Image 1 (spheres, rainbow, N blue to C red):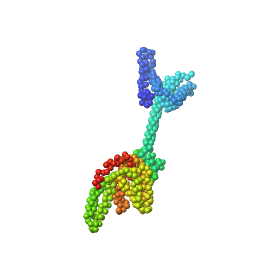
Image 2: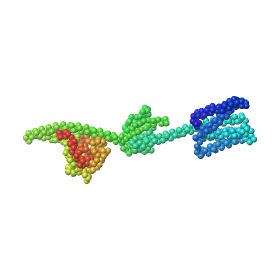
Image 3: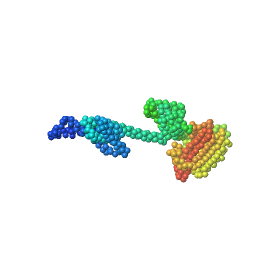
Image 4: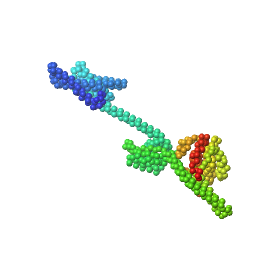
Length: 584
């Protein structure tokens, strides 16, 4: 039992305990009176009942007051003053009820005057108010029941009904107090739960709103935006205020994509299961195309279905996947090309050798000399093709040494100028800082020539400006293309930049330009120029990147490790020359 009588069950237990405990004193009194021949009292049963009722009522009034107020007596000053005011009101009402009887306006005290202040105390201060004011009312009745000036004391019947009124009133007030106390407790718990739920909601909303790389949205059944977090603002370029209430076809989707999205919402709602992960290619506010990976699931909120969508931007990942696939494809093609070139080179050696042997054995004016010369020339062209294949496959026999990139370009300058038509202007921007790399000079010449010739072909019809730039820069592995990150050391490098103002390379073929035999220049082009550049650069622990815009031009950047004394020992390692290179 709660000593503060916090529930009706506690109050019932308290009343029953008091009822049984109050029997002890009247019963003992009656027993002793009979045992020791105390003067006879009329109607022992009624007398014992009245004594029991008096003790029980005293137990209820005083016991409940002590239980409720014990260790719970501290009040704020305002509450203390309010309770004192209620006590005075009860006192005034009690005095008035007995005063009206004393002046004979009423035949008996009107105890109903006590009800309003006592009910007010029970409502405002619950058990404490009910027990205190009932005790005060009982004390008033005990005081005034003896008489008022010349008024006669209360008759037994009136006094009995007065005490019965107080007992019933006490039970009613305690029931009211407990009910209000419970309601307030429930209201407090409900308010506390509401605050906790609101706090949890704000925490979840804050987490969702501030998730740095997870775009979160909430949609209704019509696909209208109800929530749009900060990552969504960054991903798609629309502020939450702009997106709220709109459908995605007004933001990032085409009408067809919006129809597909609504169909997906319907499927999720019908099945009750999350939608499979789906990739969308969307258009941001600034017109940029991005690829997102989206998950979608539904929740029920206030009887309505809501859809929560979580997106991550996988544009860079898809680009890295394409680049990795391209690098692996080039690696496979390189291995194939190297194997074919090795066998083909052996055949060419035999063909060329026997053709030259036949030429030496025949007179110069022999009719077969002309045919043999054609065989020799064709074999030489095939041998050149094999050398380019070996360059792409990184299986050329090389003789690396420290060379200046600027010096190689200056030596090639006359040849480069003769290779360009009059409508192409050649511009050099050569760095003045150290630009030495460790590689075979012939390979570096191949790289420069192939890039220049590729730029020339891009400007052949309309002309333009071809710019060759060298510079010294520092790179880290994070800046390297994905396939090269585990192979190349980070540090200083020398960059060779070849830039043209030609037609540009369309995006759909940009990833294939380093494939051998891939060409858009028509018949007569082997398609090995850029493939050879790629192979040579990778063989020398460098990397090549390309930037191009159709109608504007193309920019190739070749980055090669800068030469230092420490690099030389690494470069002189025999492992740089493939074991079978000498057999070609």
